[in-house]
Image: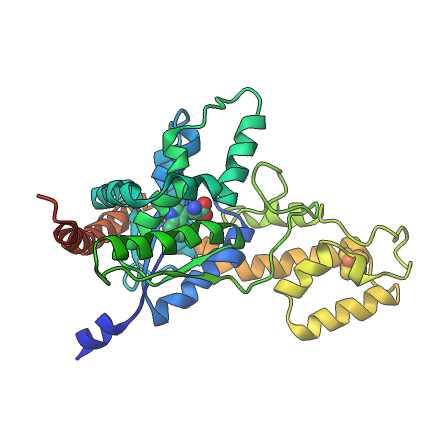
Length: 340
Ligand code: TRP
Ligand code: SF4
């Protein structure tokens, strides 16, 4: 009976490129969402190391460590290896095989039209000093992503807005495959957009590690508190008793709205407006609130940092489980294609 319920759960697949230690934007924008989805769905979360190679094929020295860091952050944030399948993309050769079949049925102009891919190409070409060769592998980005998803015949893919264009191609590929081989085997997976408001960086730009405006999940309390003190506030305030405008407090008050409870937010807002709250004190208090929220996550991370072999075991077990499913799919796909 339990098994029955298990198989009825819809499948979710989502991945993240191994960029190293994750920041609060990842946590609130993506991981927290994944954590919630674990109850309702049969989830597959993987580190997209092949996708990292599409642009950084010549910078591989940190790949293994970055992969471990990502999984460390996931598990510390509450991705539960007993409920979700956590694996590394490159350990599932079945996805590479499916990538070949899907590549055959994907018209070249579909990938050439992909606006997100076009943006990636544009950025690569303008980056000086780097190898600006656009590889065949990069052009296959959305096809490989489709293979990730279709390896498990998932129906839902939680992603950010920027990934939706790739997923449209996935649906087109699934439909085309089904049409060409006269089957209904593949689902047409739909994106599930994150509802959480985007967390901006300390300087008001998008939070990112290259901009040096991020707070890492792995940062310690002191570092976090210090970083919060750099957060942008209402620029019109000079003295402590100047009347403040929380709406113009571009970063600090936005963080309050995300991390504070509703009563505290009201107090901050009214004290700020009346000039009864200095920005430095305000941000000191904000730092404490954020640190409290992150404390249990950091404690868990600290444990796993010192037991990295447990993270490796989680990856191994997840990969084994994922491969069993992947092999089932590929067996069926080979039969549908009628390949030897
Ligand atoms: N392209 C995604 C990103 O950069 C990562 C990714 C790779 C992915 N394969 C996927 C996400 C499959 C969802 C499903 O964020
Ligand atoms: Fe922002 Fe707080 Fe300063 Fe008001 S007091 S401007 S909310 S940092």
